[in-house]
Structures are given as C-alpha cells and as structure tokens.
Picture 1 (cartoon, rainbow over the protein chains, first blue to last red):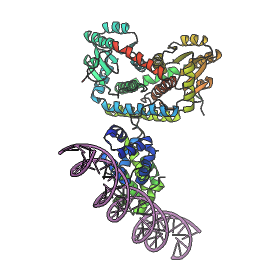
Picture 2: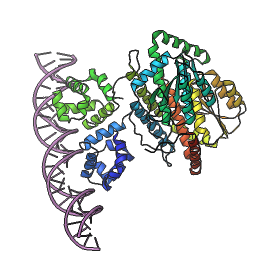
Picture 3: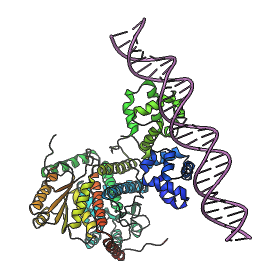
Picture 4: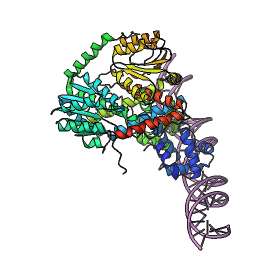
Length: 283
Length: 283
DNA sequence: AAGAAAAATGTAATTTTTTGACATTTTTTG
DNA sequence: CAAAAAATGTCAAAAAATTACATTTTTCTT
C-alpha cells in the first residue's frame, strides 16, 4: 500500500513524537525524501532514533528504506488519494489535489477491474445487433461519450437521457441487443427498473457500476469499478473519469477485435471530419 | 525523465566500468534499490567510487539520491516502456495500457495548466449572470458533464449540443455572461464562429483548448491543456479526461469561492436525490 | 493520589555507508 | 612509442544511520 496513505491512516496509532514526524512528512513529502534523518529529526523537533522508530513502525527496514517507499509513493503515476481539498486551499493547491486524486482513483479502479469480464463484454459488443448506453445524472454524460465513440464504429448505437425513452427503447429490445447501464452507486431506482425491462425482453445487460449494488444484481455482466467514495463535499466525482476510461478500454477492445479492414474504415470516418476543421499549420 | 530510460540511452556514453554497473542495475533494478553501494560495487565487479561516479554522471547528487530516482522509476510497475496499444495486445495488456496512458496524460495536462488563469476563470464564473458550456463531437459530453456539475450550484447554466442552438444562445448573450467553449484541437470551424458571435455580443469567452489554436485566438481567456496528441489509432482520447478533470477543478474553485452558506445549500441538493435511490444497507 | 510498571523519548557511542583525495592503471593521441 | 588524458582503484575521512542504554513521561493499580 501507498506509504503516504498508510501514514494518514495510522496517525491515531502513533505516539506524540511520532505524530510530529508524520505531520512534517505529510506537509512536505518532497522535502522529506531529500533530507537526512538528522535534518528530519530537527524539523520535527524530535530525536533521530524517534524518526527511525517511526520508520520501523511503518514496516520499513529503517530510514533509508522508508525514504525509498516514500519516493515511490511520490512517483509519477502513483499519487495518493488522501489529498483532500480543504477550505483554505488556494488555486494552486486545489488544482493539484484534484488532478492527483483523480489519477489515484484511476489506479484503484484499474486494480478493481476484472479483465476476464472486460474481454467477455467486448465479445458481446462486437456481436451485438444494437448497443444502448444509458445513465442518469452525472453518468448521463458518460453514456453520451460512449455513444460518440461507438457511433464512429458504424454500429447501431443508441443513447437517451430521458428515463421514459430509455424504458421504451428497452421494451423493444430483443436477443442480440446489448444494453450498457452506467451508475456509480448502482442504487438509482429508475435505472434498476430499466435493467429489469431490458432483461425481460431478452437483451443482455451490462452494468458499469459497483459490485453488489441493486443494479449489479439485475445485470448479466457487471464491470465493477471500485472507486473511493466521494466522502467529502469537494471531492470531484472521480467515478465518472474511471467510467470513461473503461469506455475507452471497451472501445479499444472492440477495434482490436474487429481487425484490419474495420480500422481502415475508422480512418475514413476520421478523414471525413477534416472538412469541418481549420487546417493545422505546418510549422 | 525516467532514470531507467536515461541509463539505456546513455549506455554508449558510459565508460567500460560504468557500463558494467549499468548492466547490473538494468538486469535487476529491484535489487539495486535495496543494496548498498558496496554490494552493488561487488556485483558489478568495480570499486565503490566508480558506482558513485556512475550516479553522478546521471545528474544525481550521489548514490542515495540515485536510488531515490530509481525507486521512483520503478514505482508504477511498468517502468521504461512506451505504453501504446498494439494489434497483438490481449485484454489484460490493453486495459492496463489505457489506464496508464490516461494517468500519464493527466499528469502532463496538470503541468501545462496555468493556475493563474484557472483562478481568474473561477472568479469570472462566480460573478457570471449566465454560464454556457458548448462543445461538439467528443467534447459535447464534456460540456454535458459541466452542465451537470454547475446545475447543482443553482446558477443559470446552459448547454446545447446543436450548433444552431449554440449560435442563437450566443446571439442573446450580454455583458456578464460567460461562454465556455471546449475543443481539444481548437480547429472546429463552427465552434470558432460561436466564439466570435459570443464576443461580438459582449460575453466573456473562455476556451478549454490547446494554445495557439484558431479557437484560442478568439477567446478572452484560454485554459490551455496540452495533452499528448492521439497519434495512433488506438490511443483513447485522453484529452476529454483532462478536460473533465479541469471542469472538476473549476467547479471546486467555484464552491470554495462561494463560501459556507453555499456549501450547505449544496448538501441539501444532494439530500434531495436520496429519494430516488435505494438505501444502502448498513453492513 | 502515590507508586510501580510500562511505554516513550533522548543521549551518546557504535556501526555502516558514502564520499573525497590521491595513487595507479589503462586508454588515447601525436 | 611516449606523453597526456581519462578511467579506475585504494584508503581514509566524513556523514549518516542504528544500537544500547539512561531518562523521562504516561498509564495502571491499589
């Protein structure tokens, strides 16, 4: 586990002096990894062995080993989630915190994803007669995005924002149709009902939602994305971002599965757009 | 830059002994970060100062500093490979590659962002009489998402997918209105025209687009997001994800600026949604 | 609330690790 | 082939981290 999160979590279990060390490190981890144990001890106003004991408590071999772990936590690509925006943050701070926690959520999401199901869903999609993407509220824009991506593939794809339209669309579905439902919590009543309707009409229902949710129970396949809950108010909805990335994964899997001829086709679609754009200067 | 790549690249510039060190490190970087300079020297069959000199040649302060860099390179699991999806990737591979490249793009985007402009745009938004979010194609879903987020803030916010509606809406704009235009390339003709119309009608135009693009030229403020271009076909549109994250940043800045009473209000909106959801079991 | 036990912390010495100075070897170049 | 330059190693000094132990603080018992 990320050692910065570990520090944050264990904070209560620390002794008074150890907590002082923790504060200093959390306040400025970048400085910490470039300091010697003596410097850090002075900054925390404790003795050197205390810093050493602090390191050991976090299951590291000692101070140098601790620094290694810390460096890894700070490395690009593995930011830590616990960077919560608070009231007094300036633009610089909240911008960085949001980007970092978004990246961290993506990492968590990736790990929670079951690749086998991804593969099976890609299979399904390539063979589908019709694909529908539905979501409500914040997830609506994700469905919207999916529409955009899959539309280029020249497959029959459908998206409605309106619940009634979603229901009607599902009423008319048949075997071979795939309905993809997107919901972070998986507790939105109307969406669960849409799932039921789709299933009753022999469509295959794929849920992009959290495991064990009411929605998940109604789905044929569940692509579960466990993203840290947006506990506090400022927390951006990282779930959407994870969902979008998953859509990218599905779209990519789709393209790969369809093979070469299909990809050429895709290129033609891209070229068609050119007319609506200003040319790029060749500089 | 990733230090492992750096070693690979500079390999030719190294001296004979230094190359020996390089080999040993590249062969087993994990071992390297947990060894002392003495151990590593013995493994490479060179003297300790040689290892030290090797570290310095790579622009590090010394051996411990080198280990820190190395640890960071090793942090995100897959160190020195360029992560592009290729034809022969299995589900496991392309899933990981997409997640990783998305995270990497976010990092790049964050660094390209000018915080001062973020701050000024947040200012603008908090004082706006009306906020419009417009985008076309893939960026439409980003605008859609922005609508969702800002709608909760109980401010007059507008979003149209249709170009004609966008134009009409801008025709009617006045001083105090803010129009946010989203486009990765900034070369979509109709959107550039929308920007011109908005400006002619005294609206402030904010562009979320790439610097120096035709669209950027027409904007009052440009939030430039330099995201690696989707050069190859499989590359997902990471730009959207960066745009969404930026929307999160703006929304967060907005909330912070509005202060406490506003946040309580926000909580009430959230509570209202509860009726439409299945309760979470308390387990 | 006093005193004993346990836990936490600091001091100082020891050990380990890293670095610097300089000698020796190897390589390069005219 | 010799002289200069570069590379490498040896050894000692310096820096850093760790250990052992003393002192202080906290906790628990009576």
